[in-house]
Image (cartoon, rainbow, N blue to C red; front, top):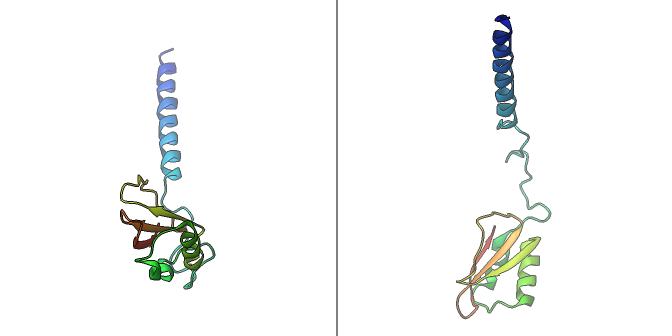
Length: 112
């Protein structure tokens, strides 16, 4: 009967090792990710190019201007960020940001 606890001990250890190996495999950094070599050199659909909307700096931000800037930058979404805007640190490469000052004049154009 004493062999049974040893067998249980072996099974428990084996299960823990197997679980750890599976978890490590799930966290592997070899997952399929696009590489810069595979990415096309030009803008992709729904990608944001802030330089295409740089000429809006110094203008008053309006909903109409925001839409024009979004289209020219090729972004899928756009937003106006005021000095007191609360924003997340989430990066979205398909979003155009127009930073404005207290008078709603555009001071910075960026993607993210």
